[in-house]
Length: 315
Image: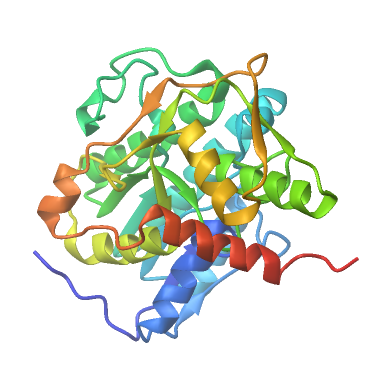
């Protein structure tokens, strides 16, 4: 049943400067929401329960989008495991508890598709959670995200809080992180092909075999979906958010090559880990709810590359 969010509601987007949070803020403003209460990391440490409680008491948000967190690719996960599990578990715990304590009307928690077992049947249904071992290359992050889901469920069951969870697939889009030491696969490929083109290099090295299959969702689609779920979704069970379509990393690299540096040649470094063999979400529950993505992958990659070019450091 649709529950319209009043345009004068106080809305807190936790993590508003990140890839997802900034897209949600843009979407909220485009749809006429003006009472957005936001805080940078310098203004509010979301790992500090006392500080978060004080901030909620002072700002009194009605609705919360909990999309803040420490994120990164395989390299970042493997070299900073303590940060990934501590930061994310603390952020989830402080915001969820403050939302309960200060009477938030509804909270949407955003997880990640890495919560599912490495060998989960494909496409992955929501019920696959906790049915097998996690992918070792991102288990620290995954465990923190699973804890976030269980936090929302536990506060619903014990206190009757209207807290829901959504699990997006792999994301990309404008404002992504293009740092090769901590980025995910799409921004890493865009930067690698661009820099190879600028330097006149023909070879571009891709981590792994290129065989794993992945699904990709444009961040503007996710932002639209988050607003949609806030008004249309009420269930205790988390809901998958994706396209229901996947391709191999090799196919993705070929697509980025066509857009960024058509003359390049792919070289696969098989000494590097592949990660989960396949990760495709079953989005039948989301489609039944009435939502479907709008960005096709090539279109989304082209918009992301244009954003990257527009924001290159001229120095």
